[in-house]
Image 1 (cartoon, rainbow, N blue to C red):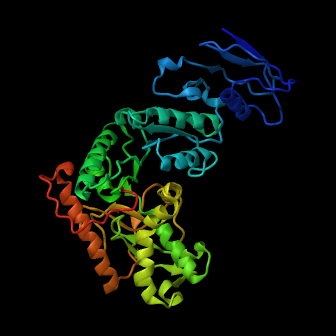
Image 2 (image 1 turned 45 degrees about the vertical axis):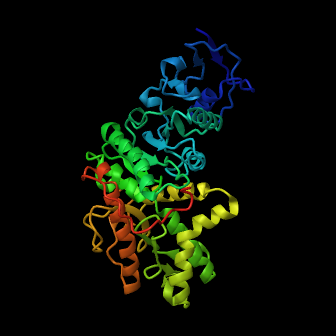
Image 3 (image 1 turned 90 degrees about the vertical axis):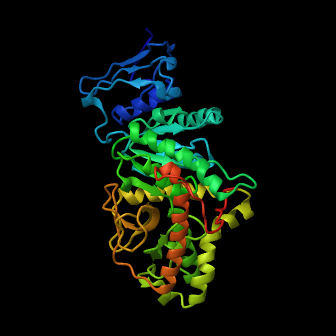
Amino acid sequence: MATTQFNPTCSKPHLHSSQLSFLSRTLPKRRHCSFAPFHRTQHASISCSVAPNEVQVPAVKTQDPKSKPECYGVFCLTYDLRAEEETRSWKKLISIAVSGAAGMIANHLLFKLASGEVFGPDQPIALKLLGSERSIQALEGVAMELEDSLFPLLREVSIGIDPYEVFQDAEWALLIGAKPRGPGMERSALLDINGQIYAEQGRALNAVASRNVKVIIVGNPCNTNALICLKNAPNIPAKNFHALTRLDENRAKCQLALKAGVFYDKVSNMTIWGNHSTTQVPDFLNARIDGLPVKEVVKDHKWLEEEFTEKVQKRGGVLIQKWGRSSAASTSVSIVDAMRSLITPTPEGDWFSSGVYSSGNPYGIAEDIVFSMPCRSKGDGDYELVRDVIFDDYLRQRIAKTEAELLAEKRCVAHLTGEGIAVCDLPGDTMLPGEM
């Protein structure tokens, strides 16, 4: 066994980055320490000599990576800490599973998670990354980049292609992966292909994830994918499943702020109703600008009903035309926003949008679909639907249209939700930008 003796008076480190990072967090901050070079072996360890009044650095043990095929690189190292020597300011590890982890959205999102941007600077996390056989090499590259970034809060990374392994004990599941819509493909075919993926992932979550796992579905069509997923996970509360409509909310806030000539933080109470498609309803009736109803600030009501609504619905397509790629970065930002809305108390009087299970809703919207609605949270990961909203004929007519689309999508995937034979009678092709 190779051993390196710690010398507090040395000045230049030669230790492996993961070990140095660990020791720098564990040793008293006033000392600057370094290590003489050592030859790593399968069972290498590190011991330190310190003054009697200093904390003894716990041994760092390494394992043969081949014995832990689910881990990656430096994250295969095992840190054998005694409970009293753990960094007391840090919280219990949170396990986060991400599907489509080799894609562009995840490429932005994973580094936000690892940096502490979501859960804070004292919350260690473990990332469980799900890919496919085709993307496994790219997934290894993602793990390498995470490894090289030296995030102190990122304690574990594992990669795999089997959701039953990757989702084990997950407390959050961010389901991004979905197949794109090919040339000439009908929307009903897209619903079936991606629905099968989300049915399988729902079964995997039901089998191995935490019983209170929070699930955010990003892959499109996300509302119906969320419905399929929750129907295949009967042991997990349906309330724990969310379809991502936060990017639509953020886009709506941006457009209202531009029109009113204010910064976007002045826009509140913004709701996206319904489906994440071109039938979605950005609600300017209940939204506020600097505390005032939008219609009192923006006097051009025709603009609100026509141009504003269409801009929000088609914003993603315009972005693709301009840049030649989909909105991966802003989508990752909206996932972060959606997560923080659930773990941070909602500001008094405000709310946020999320696609949630509609059963028991107070708005008269059809039961048993996933519908974007206004939500509030106490910051405990749960939410409640907002009751103090108003409706007019314009808003109700628009909501009815997006509701009809979601009911049709539900009938189209009945074979994946355990409700019988699928009947596809979609009212129209509301293809989302980026589906192609």
